[in-house]
Length: 463
Ligand code: GLC
Image 1 (spheres, rainbow, N blue to C red):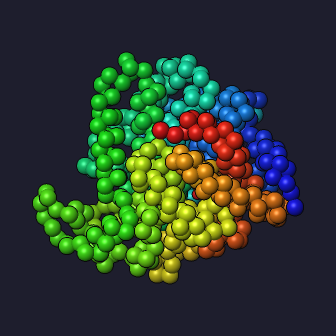
Image 2: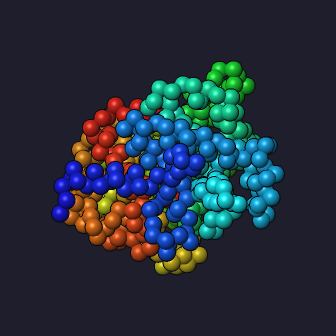
Image 3: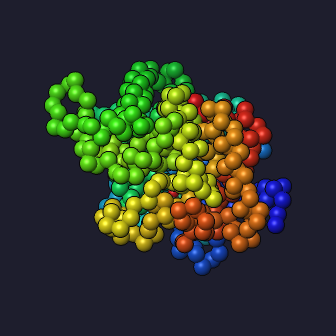
């Protein structure tokens, strides 16, 4: 049995041990501090998305250097007209667009020299596209600026240019006409086949926060031609998500009574959602006081699953309005066993099972029901939960979440060893294939504890 103090101090030791160095400078953290036998996986890489809670943790201690180094390094890896030929030469048919940031990078030795090697998905399992990397990068750049007060870094020409490249790529006019971002399967934290292609909520929430960040970070002279477009996109995106993704009892009832095959402008069922697609669990699951944003929306398709990051980020960046944010927290409170259980918290609820699991995941054994991305519980979500709860004045939810994780870890610390995820309907089991000493599990705990003590740090993250 450990005390909370010991647990936190162990977390710091482990976080420090995960630091990745390049030319003797700290430039990131590896995804998990693993033993050699597991090194065939890419957990020795520094992932852009995984580094965010590490960065937050370091910033709470005033350690901005590692974050600045990380931002500089990843900026160098961003695809631009300078490096595009060189990058593409290594790739077997994969063609990342100009502006894209990698999913991760590693330090390797080439001819006796250390080099940074990026992975844009050309080596990743399933060859997935890391759409969220650029978005997290922008969000982190703003976090860094707010936490350190360093205005110079972001004003450097290279950074201003990097931001513009991202905007050019993400605001490119393609075939889609919605304000949402249309993405391929597994383009974010859920980087496997899980039926999350099209317009997943997590990407929309990150896109919204990233656009707000970019607009804040660009110097006036560098956004003259794009500022209005950003503002318009933000407004349309906000309206679209708040109106069409929102699900509460009233909306569920509306869907239950939907007429179909409606044509024209003034219609109610704009996306032609069939009431039959409303899953039985969803009907009884949404409490009167609660609500949430649906996982995805497209023609004839509404994904009724609850996705934690999308919903919590929507609260954090005010993509959800005030009432909706309160209702999301009410839902979490009322459906605590389902969504939090014994480890905060489920990445996605409920799990898909049987035939649906076969069809949607392609029989992925890692994503069997109530495991990993498919209803598994991820301790990294603790920091999102705490930040969202504090943002809307629901401190008791934040406290409750931390207490649960702390209780388990103080009791089982040497057994659990900071796993990547937990399995089971209540999150009782260490995940079947979970890595140990997963860095974002450790960092999230540090960040969650810090936010409780220093709620003013929320200003780094929130909008
Ligand atoms: C897994 C997760 C992904 C994470 C990576 C490193 O691939 O699905 O979200 O970034 O591991 O931790």
